[in-house]
Image (cartoon, rainbow, N blue to C red; front, side, top):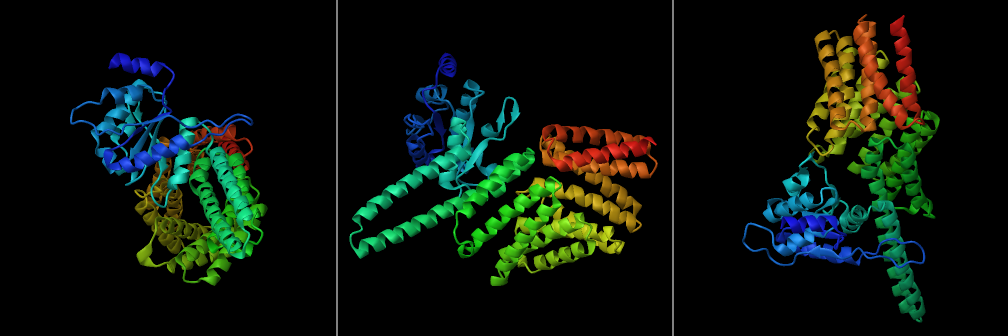
Length: 520
């Protein structure tokens, strides 16, 4: 077996992929096999489009022995990639575990992909998928579960992983292929539409197809606004986020009558505008960002007015109020900012308590944390600020083990700093010291987990500057210099990564100014 495996690992792959699955999931695995082999890949003009084939799937039930069959071993050795159908049954299958381990042994550098079909990742991913000789691994996964990627986008994600082609290129080609099919059907229908009945049938079909296409396009916009945007923020790519935003806005620019769009589409368009405003703000262009946030606010207010008891619209408008309040804080309009933060809190109080969602809790944490900060900035009552900060910390701590635990930890680091300031203002120095230390510790933990996440690194630099200033004000200049040196290192990494990011450049200016103050 060993000689055969080594031979297969060094030769040209016979199969584009090997599908590993528990026979409990055989129906999905066979359907996935058919769809992968039918898929045609993009090719240069004038050349035939290559199929993603052959793909190996073992249709035989494995015997009750303790080892893999020779056919399976040979196929693994001759495969360019491994696709694991992930489910609780797959996690419990020793055959799936053996196939993953053997494939990694033979081909340590070839891709291992996951097609998640049932259960949470922790319940569905086999241990062999998450761990290799070099340590823990985060597999590239396509989420086929209901309400997630869906079969079409999930299939395209797998194809991207198998071919190293960009996902957006495959999505574009897939849309073009579907459009060509629709055009062919339309042309045939026009030829056959000799009577009114035929014309009516064609019109109904065309309308249904347009709705389906719009639904798929909206799904892609949602992906751009959530998973893709979070990843791009983590790697600090404002330029790519611009391209994503423009692509999403192009979809809506093609709609002739915006007021006739469904409410979900109007809100999704407003969120694209919000993302563009956030990117403007990152560059220091607060005027342009403010204009975009006002458009966001106008849209969410209109949607809420038409359905005032809809929880999702209440939540959306609370987010718009929070956005406008934050930028008014940046512009120095503290009273308007306080009023809008209070509006956001009042809206969140209207959400049904029995239907709380993680994103609702995340926003409430931010809003009450912002109320703490604005109370302190505007010289308000310290005890009121302290109560808001305690509530923000409590909510964020409760979210740490949820699906957005990293986001909650990011917010928590800032909440701790404001809690420290509020405690100091309220005459509780022990709580102030502990909260401020907890803020830096929380940020340190985020950086330790993802040292190349530029959003986390930006926060880490901000918190180090905060502590350096605090130490300098107390006359502890040795500590201030040590903290400032760490902040300088963070800022230098940020600016090298993206010299065009105006906010990161401003952090560098702040660090230089503080260094001069300490040296006096």
